[in-house]
Length: 177
Image 1 (cartoon, rainbow, N blue to C red):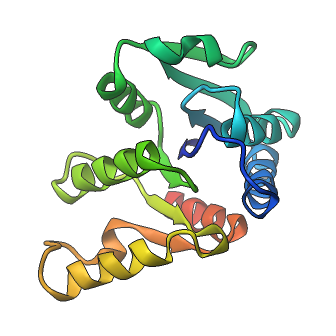
Image 2 (image 1 turned 45 degrees about the vertical axis):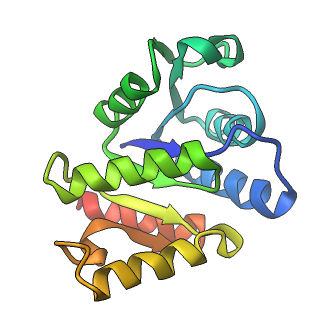
Image 3 (image 1 turned 135 degrees about the vertical axis):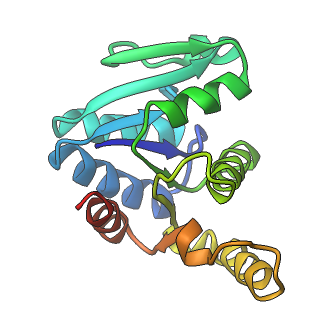
C-alpha cells in the first residue's frame, strides 16, 4: 500500500521522534511505500530513514522552493511547482493518508484532504496519529463540529484517530481487506 504521511520537517523531541520511528519501521517491515513531502530533514528524515532501513520504498513529492532539502536516493522524487500541486500529487500517489505531528503546513494538508473526502473527491482512509496527545484539541474540535451539525458525514467516516503507530497501521490494513 502507498501510504502518504503528512508531518513536520522540524527537528523534534524524542516524545515525537521515537513513536514516528516506530511507525516508520512498522510501515517498512510490512512492505508498504512511504509517500511523503520528500524532505531529508527533521521528522520527515526520521520517518524516511525508518521506512528505508526496513525495506519499504520511498516516494517523495517536494516543491520547487524546498528542492534543495529533498532526500537523495529516494526510489522516486517529484518536484512540484507549488504547494497546491504538491498536495494533489501526494494524494494521487497514495492509497491512504496518515497525519503525524506538524505545524501549519501539516494542518493545511490534513484539512484539505479531509475536505476533499467530505465532498466525495476521494475515499482513501485518513488517520490522525495522535502522538503524545498532540491532536487532542483538534479531536475535540472535530467532535464539536459533528455534534453541532457542521459535518455532513459522521466524523468516524471522515478520519480515524490512532494513539500509536500499531493502531494506525492496523486500521489502514483493515481498510484494504
